[in-house]
Image (cartoon, rainbow, N blue to C red):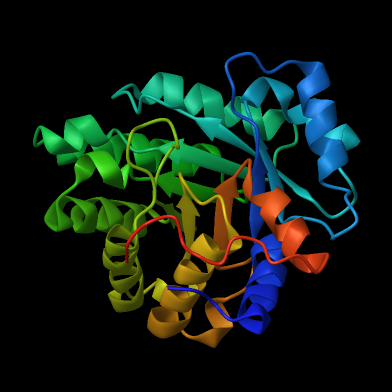
Length: 259
C-alpha cells in the first residue's frame, strides 16, 4: 500500500512536531549528545523533545535548541522490579533539569502475575517526578497478549502517568498497530483519557510508519489528540525520512510492516 504525497507531507510535519529524537546507545558520550542537539536544530524544524540517558540531561538542557524539551529514561531498558533504583533514576533526571521521564514498567513482573509490584514502581516514580511529564513504557512486543497490554495500560492510567509508550526499542518487537489500538482504547475509556497521550517507539523509521499511528490516534482519541501534548514518536532514524519528505523527496511511502 502506498500513501499519497500530500498525506505523507502532512504526516511528516506532524511527526516532526511530535518527535522525541532519541539517542540511547551504550556508547553514547558527550560528543554524541552534542550531535543530537545539533540535529534538533535542523532546517526542517524542531522536534518536541530529545530523549537521552539520565547522565546527559544537563548537557542536553544546555545545548538543545530553545523550546525542545529534554526527556530521559528510568529503569531502562530492563524494567526491573526495583523501586529504589527506578526512583533514583527519576530523581536524577529531575535534579538535572529534565522535563520528561520515560519509565519502563516492570513488565516481566506483570507477566509473572505480580501486578502489585509493578504498580508500586510506577506509583513511586510518579511521586518522585511530580510536575514532570511521565511516560510509561509497556514493552508491548514482549507482553504480547491483548489482556496484558490492557492491564499494563490500566496500571499506568490509574497511577497518573501522562503517556503510554509502546516499547524501549531494545527488544525484537517494537511498536505495532495492534498493540497501539489496545493502548489507545484503554486511554479513550478511562476517566483521565482526555489528558493522557500515546507514544509509539521501536521500529518507527519512516513517515509512512508514523502515519499509521497518526491515523489510529485520530480515529480513537480524536483530531485534538494529534499534538505533541498527546502524541509522540520515539526514534533515532525517523528524522532523516521526515527531512527527505519535507524537502520534496518521495520518502518511503510504504509502511515497514503489514497492517
